[in-house]
Image 1 (cartoon, rainbow, N blue to C red):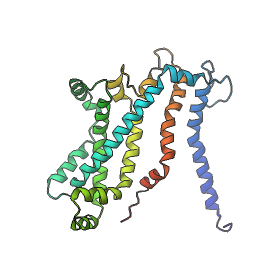
Image 2: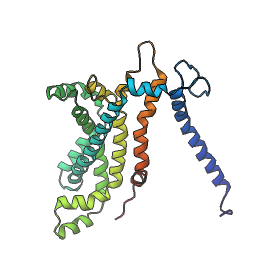
Image 3: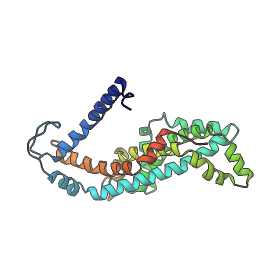
Length: 274
């Protein structure tokens, strides 16, 4: 083992340690400001001055982060679940059906990747208002699912097209229905791409600000980014409370990552056993 330790290994370890330190600098700055007293005007990376836990109390109480965290969790889980299920079910016939319509339908969804979502803000908001969905989480959920569907269908369809049809045909010959073949054969094979879509959709929805701001401002379902925005004033901002709220809001994401770490790594690796 000692003979295998070469100069390249040492250089790689140093590079990895340097990368880890580089990524930890923003985390240190976040926590450093979050614990600082509001009168402490030193730099975010400067250690010293007065520190307090009151910023977290102010962020939790004044920002009402408890209900906001619950709203963010419910909306994120609903959006991710619907995107994964609907996206997978829609991608399968597009990938497997023959003829011209699957190809044109695939191009139709792919076109959604190049159209800015901001162009549809006004008509969508008017439609949601007419349906009575403003001020409810359903308006945000529908926007999140619709916004993430083009990328999901594009990725899943491309992935399914690369899978061999042999297992599906064998399942059909054994009496399995097309729907059963999809859930029992195809879905286990596309778990990597579904994990990728789910992780990216979860991060995007958790950090989403504009759509929840438009649909949920003034309601009881405001999300964490909307509540944190209240700490910004016209002439002054409570930066320690803002950073404390950001630290609190990162806890559910980090907890979910560590709990699902093996599944996420396995999904991002893209390995498929056939």
